[in-house]
Image (cartoon, rainbow, N blue to C red):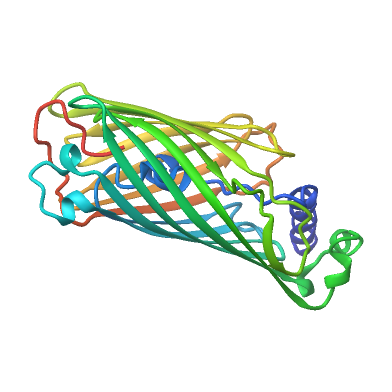
Length: 319
């Protein structure tokens, strides 16, 4: 068993560090609950909320990725007591905190974002957003594997702790409606050129993220929700994933999701007056390069000012 664990660590770090010059991609299977993390233009799309998730990837493998996320979004229209903030409100802000561990690396990411909404029609809005992103990447040289120790960039940090700090910017634009949205966001617009500390990563390329979603109430007791995401980053494979959920009686949802060529997931969750809690179980595809071992993801979304209730028969209370 011990040999298998060491072999898994070796394989994992080999895959993770073949692209050490680039940032690791953050996989969030419940991406449809955290739209504003990928695109600052979607800040406040569901009003003022507190959101969070815990993701344990490849459970049972030492050094496998673990991700923790917390965010708060504030819609100024709701804060001002607008009768219909989704229609009348114009501005929103958010703070996002993400902590990610994988192998010898620890990343802490803080993003402050602002979004402004332009009303195009009675139900259609154009949203523009920008964010300031700060990341601290910590390398524990005591956890480097033999392969990593032979890497010319990492070998100088053997047996010591090293830190790299990066300041960058995120931008986003989105077309939003109560029942659908289309969006484009860009992370690290400046390519990580503003940095300090140790230089154990040679580059920090920008990434582009396209998101889209559609939801519809089929009856008073059933709604269908579909979300998709396509992301591009230099030196990494393109990433395509989607989720499909059925919401029953505005209280329980069941869903499935798929990350093309990598993994499939099953989802379940409950909706209360102000809170949504979900659990997602993900397993790798047989032909993917992921390590054996499954992924568990827990999510929570709390509405600060509005209830999870319909105001008309066609409304859907969640994404």
